[in-house]
Length: 322
Image 1 (tube, rainbow, N blue to C red):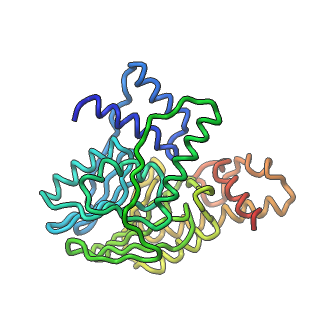
Image 2: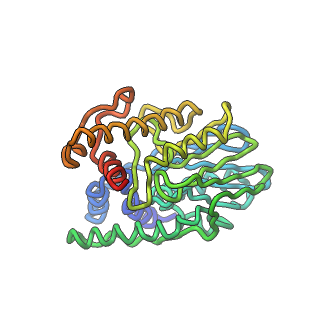
Image 3: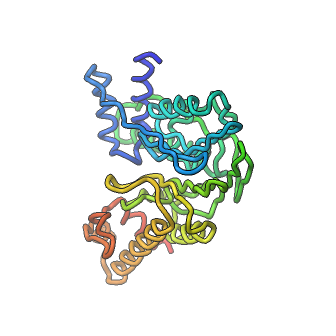
């Protein structure tokens, strides 16, 4: 691939990764590249086998999962364009000529779907929950509108490639000797989060239902519900066993992108504590402005660090709305 195309992919990816970095930093990087300044260092990427035919890929954005056998291939999530190309090249090499049957999007956020245009020519189908295509288009429109309202120059044009195959509640299919099962438990991180289970390997990709030991993104415009998120994690725990390996969408720097049932329980308990904290502050008569500015640390969840407005505001708004 030419240097110009790589620069384009990197620039395009910056416009989509708002859930991972502040927008001002992203567009500053785009501007620096346009001004001829040295591009940022290439992202660190890695393929890690887990069990059987299943493993995961880390790079720029949410963790990618994969199943590669001699007769079938599935990729879960697409990250950003720059690392999507690296991942796709690595999958093709490992698949040794076997076609990619499915690219699954666990939800609509740009750091999980930004690489869809890169994967599109190489996959038979892109699969996601039925809500995801519209959520993806709406998020892109909001970003454009926000920049216009702020008087900012247009961001680089980014192609929106959405799922062409969707499911409502469950999906189960044999792909290359492995049974892939998808389930929607209801609104949580967004209103379109799919849990993806590879049954023989006993590996489950949780998407952004798990932010391992870090404050999560709570996408209220995207239909999130923290109250139901707790129930979703309980449902996922009930549906899987003690030996299940879980792949997480994101993790704090010092924590892994995979884990066990105890990590799902920890996330559930963190969300419960977050809800209880905001409820108690509201019951004490504190105003929204005071509550969302808190920098307290949740008792028992020191690894997350101080609370932040980006998690307190959507929780307050959800509870205030009843």
